[in-house]
Length: 112
Length: 119
Image 1 (cartoon, each protein chain N blue to C red):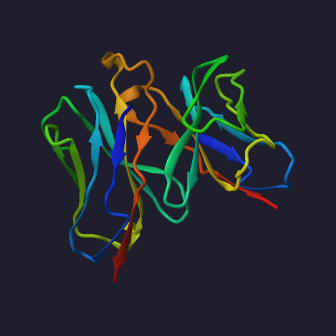
Image 2: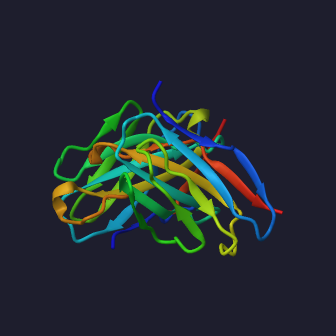
Image 3: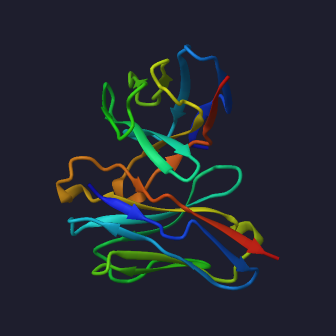
């Protein structure tokens, strides 16, 4: 079945370390997105990519980086510059614009 | 920039009853899409229903229906015959249409409404 796979499901990071969250899709979607979810904040856009080798900053890009070398993959790196990285991270992809997103199951990142 | 507002952080409904979740949005565009997503405790985001702004007819999906009031920029979700499995966070979302000239088409979400279903 087609879908989006995020890994790992839970991730622990020590302060000062970079960590990379994986997102892979086999839906042949052009666009991919990363959102951060905090209690009471809804979903906030970190980065998005509408085509391979191109990506744009969202509303809260500081302290994060991404790459889009393959259509299927859109990894997110949480750098040590991100001051409050503990959150739930959701990856999504979309094909035809009118049909919303398909979401992955998320990664819970905790800084220890 | 578009904004989406969900004014009810939490709501509850008795099992088998009907509940309506509110959503308003702000946009200068004439064509766009609106969505309701459900996020159960598993945290998997599930698309519940979608509405195209150029369609006057309200969308329905089984027990879920919307009341789309374009002039008022309102997009409420009605859940009929509520079931225990309906307990979740519900997010309203907005997306520009391709011919709107927006240039980017990411979803903008409200902050969500937590729905509890009482047995």
